[in-house]
Length: 213
Image (cartoon, rainbow, N blue to C red; front, side, top):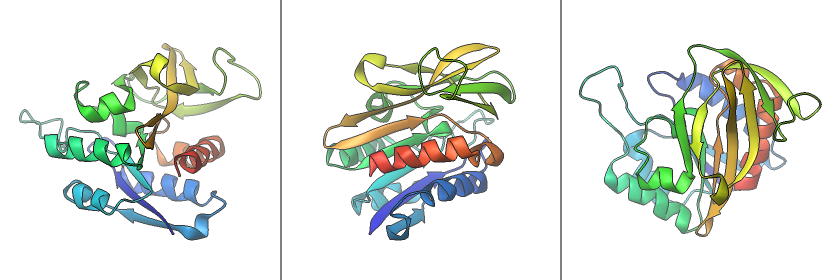
């Protein structure tokens, strides 16, 4: 049995949309019948990772209520250490969309991810995702109405597999690497349920989940 635990949704991102997108991607896996998927809360992260699941999916930004002056982060120092130790000892992490947003760039989790969200232009944009760098048209691209994430990424310490271009410029959209005995994959698409269910997004997300497993 392949065990996946997922922490999804936050102030700006609908948990149910995330669930629909994740389940659609898992349904594309060749071993989908062997997958046990469990949704967890921030209070359950430590205990869930102690059970050594095959994959931890993080689709939650760090500030829980960013509109408040006293911003509460869910990623405590202890959980920061726990997540990194989980991967070092053979676990895998998918940092998905908001799962790389709002975190302290100096925290262990972001250093492990080797990249993080910087900003996105207001609203949804006409974004073209590219499977090959600078190849902005053709069969290795697909269009999507999406938030175009602009990111910081240590490109020399990871493998970039997805790029994006839009009216506001070009960015990186996905990267992956080994870390200790485990694996890390960062995947920036997508913001809405419709975009998560886009065939290209769903197939690519399934491909990266399979790599992580």
